[in-house]
Image (cartoon, helix red, strand yellow):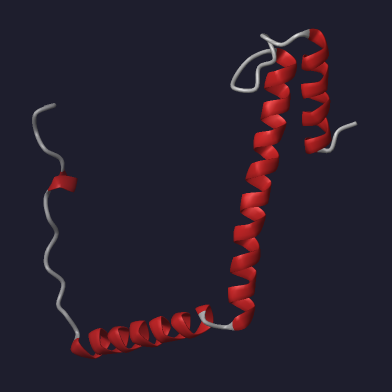
Amino acid sequence: MSGISGLESVPGPQLPQIDFLKRFNEENQKKYAENDARFKETPLVKKLLEQSKLNKEKNSKEIENKYCLRGAEWGVGDCSAEGMSPEDREKFIAMLKEKVGEK
């Protein structure tokens, strides 16, 4: 029985195409595309998209700095301070904390 294909593999019958509904759908799709294009060109949407892009860059940099600080404290990763002298390590971690906003 495992070699027999199921009913889901059999294509269904071709449904009749109704010209009126097809034209209606095409007209609606055209209207939606025009409205979307007009909406995307509004000053408010452009401003919000730009803010979103800037926030994304800022947030990714903040997260990167937090992970760098954690790596330096734990002694792992690209920001590891394992090879530094104790004073240099403390200065480096203090600089990272200041960059991240911790005190």
